[in-house]
Length: 102
Image 1 (spheres, rainbow, N blue to C red):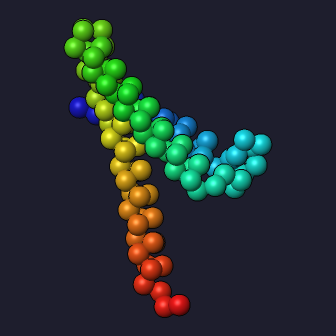
Image 2: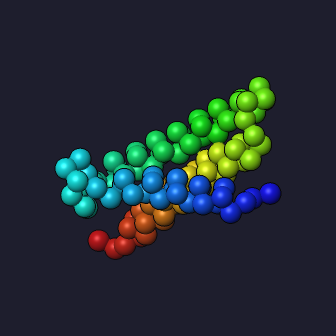
C-alpha cells in the first residue's frame, strides 16, 4: 500500500533530481547543454536503481522494511520512465526534422 509519506518522499527525490538540471557549474540558469542534462538524468536513474537494489538486498537480509523497498523501487521506476519519455520525445523530434523539406 502506498502511503502519503512514501509519495511525498518520492516527489521530493524527483524534485531534487530535476532542480539540479537547470543550472550549470557557475550557477547560471540555462547554461547547461542538452547532452549534460541527459547524462545527469541517466546518472540519476542509475543511482536510484542502485539504491533500490540495495534496499532489496537489505530487506532480504532482514535489515529494511518492505515500505522502504517499495518506495525505492517506485522512485527508480519513475526516474527510468522519465528518461524513456525524454528519449521518445528526442526521437520524435529527430524524425520530424528528417521529414522537413530542404
